[in-house]
Length: 290
Length: 298
Image (cartoon, rainbow over all chains, first blue to last red; front, side, top):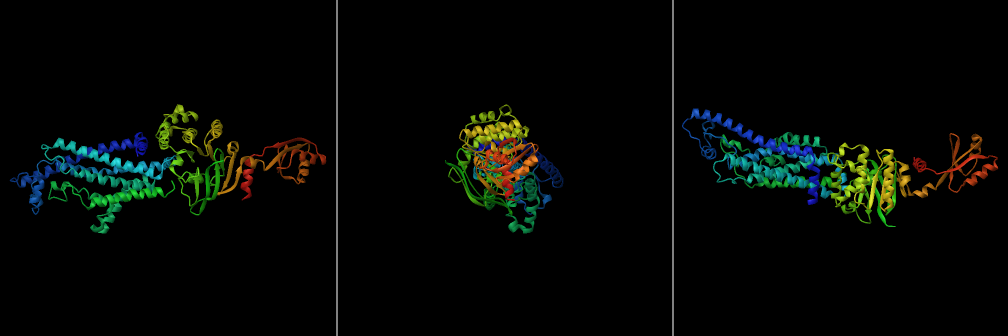
């Protein structure tokens, strides 16, 4: 196992595309967090000031408790927190996990490039000719997927902690809701297994990336729309997305979805999909000429 | 002698095409086994199957008497078709991957790079190499750690004459150490120079297999000339022992069966009042016989 990891390490550590994509991922994610926060607070401030004009008697209240109290109150009558800050504990866990999940596609590119390179350089052949079994080979790629998922979860965890500590004034409930990181991990490892599966199926990086994006943006949403909510909700990516709900509505209106991370059926379905993708990837490599 | 590889009734189909059609052969330990055949005759497919990267439709193969396994493959060094390496990695890093897979100590890398003359360029990335250098790196990767068997598919592809000579010497040297070598080539000359045994492949079938020595003793040819080659030609045509005669510039080349000697020819011609100015036994090249064997089945 250590041998397989060492092999992946030699293969990737000197690979510029890999390093560039990793740096790009880290930088883009961090910037987008700051950007989203700035964008939301500017919307918040403008809505707030218009509300303040209309209803000057209202004082700012915690949006969550407020939302629960006033479910049937007209949206425009809602008082909204003066200060929008998505980085405050404990909501930061939910918010950053959600934003980070949008950037999984960059990690998926890395996985696709990693596997399709082995085909285009024909190094999958030389790896096996020289004494890896097909199982070893696919195991090394699965470990890469696992490690990349763990690393990005740790990165997201650190982002939450750092941004949270900077923005919050009270540190009483720092790790409340940090379960979202677990949700993020499940989401990312399933998505990356999906990418690996597509990579092995298509073998060409460009085509695989296009297919992944087509599926994510057009094919599945279309299929989900046609199937309505009943089954459509359980298609791989829809199911994946439901692990971490859109978190920002609570700043504007009533509470939407779960604000706390709960263990639910979607997680089990996700793990199930993840195993299916990994298993079929293995079967494809086991049963085909290389 | 012990068997290094035995192949039994191997078949591989690509759609309707039988790339490999019911092939069986054995390679003895310590021999240099040549697989000869024109392009597309199934050489690489056969090697791909015995290296477990192509799955056969039928048949079996055994390495050292055992079923295929990764442990077997660790004892085999190989080149298949083009050199396959990570283009962005240096020669050393690429060999590091291979020695890691084969569980070899790292010191082997230096030795094999020096053997193929790439040590000076060890830290350059693979993509900066010329075709010849890539091929040398492929050979370095095949010989790393002195494997028990070396499989070479077109090993002199892309090399200059000097390189070709060096690689052939290297193959002989490796074989002299007792390493089993399996060499696939469409260059007959190559096989003739280094192989002890060989098989001829065409359209996925084995047309001939045997000892390199046996084959070159099947037929032989003589270079003959006299003052009047036209007359000589007519007379030779009537000689039963002669299979074929061809004209080459100032000489005639007569091919005949193995039993015929120069004495037979000379005395026959002498009886017909022809005196020769030139009579030499020509070592029949494998190439000619190879082409003959290929033509016979056409």
